[in-house]
Length: 304
Image (cartoon, rainbow, N blue to C red; front, side):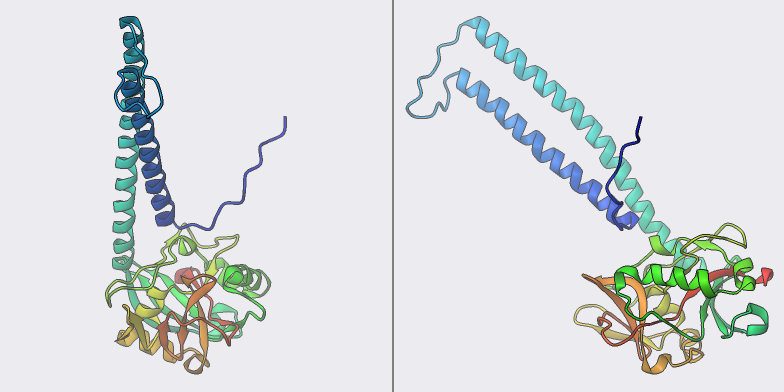
């Protein structure tokens, strides 16, 4: 017996998925309202109320009235049961949505900016790596970014992560692989901030050193770049500019060539477009003249 085939899984964040569930609940409610309306019209027709002009009202006997009434009662009972299921679905989804928002806030609270330089002698790379943040309760778990970019010629936003994965597989040193931690970066893409403090998309490390597979390295999110590696960042509409923290400015100053480049971020800001660090400013401006990304990753520094 062959296994069923499923369409490709869309690239959705947890928040996107929850919003789709909310939409499905709303559509079910609309469908149920149409069914209830139809039942009401059925009763009106049997009772001779609101019969369309030109139609002859029926003259039901008591048996017909009781039969129709029982049919309507059964349908209303079924809809009421369905409403109970929808209420449970709505409550569970609402709790998940609130928890998701809380997790996003907590993730930022769990990370502290920290700047240090990891030399090639430690990382086995030909480039320095810059530590830009660390877990507040485990300073060995550090977010690092390569001080020199990799060239993703011919890459679009849709396949930036694939290109980073290919680079990681082909070029990352055994030393960095031994210290690498898995992460949730691709689930925490973040969004353009409405206010200066509305930063999101903060990844967290998982597991133990020596993680394998794809998505170990990634592009920074809008929020990570604003908090940990930039000169300033835009927020609001129309855009305002907020100066980045001093440590973020220091970290950005250690990136080779970044002050005059556009750099990919993983946060989507439009159809087929990503946020960018444009000459030090984290912005929604679409990238049109660069193929550069400074890959980041979570590592256990104690494993280097």
